[in-house]
Image (cartoon, rainbow, N blue to C red; front, side):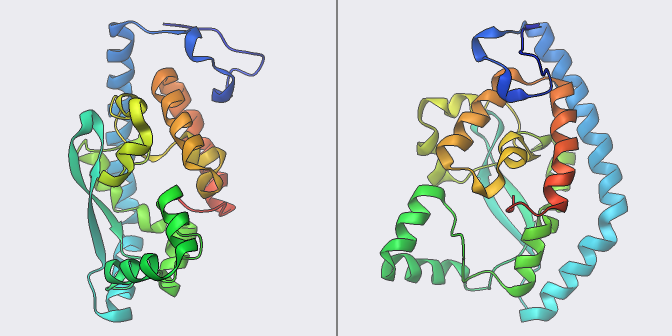
Length: 231
């Protein structure tokens, strides 16, 4: 594999897509080390962070009696669907409330159609806001990583309705496993527009290396600690 970059080789934004040449053997080597890294990190983190996950799962149950773990069908590697796990951050009637909000508030409907998110989502509980801000709600996805459905680093898994936003670029999205963190999260998190997010996912898929993954993981730590948006 040959990659020619500008003066700062650690800035993925400086890598031009037409400057990347990767052979099948390069991709296999990257996938091997990436999967080994995923297994080691996910297994270690699950053991170390299981008390944190269990504590907040209990607090969620005590909050409203609803399920602590939220599972949603997401699209990932090769376009396959899987159950993506999170600690529940919304009210138990979140889906019904969303339908009402989008029907009655045109501004919220436009925001949802543009980003698939609501900046000030009234469905999120007080505890849920903390979980999202700290990204603790994403910890159950370590199990998805361990099962091979996700990776530590990659594009965020998407729901059915988001596929059309990728257009022809969906093939790049499905060429890699979705991740707990990724390029758009460390560069902008929720401040990033969806169009920019797609562009970053494409850039990551075409320029990925094991060392770029390490760089993104290291950049994720201050991004989470500074609570710049949410994953």
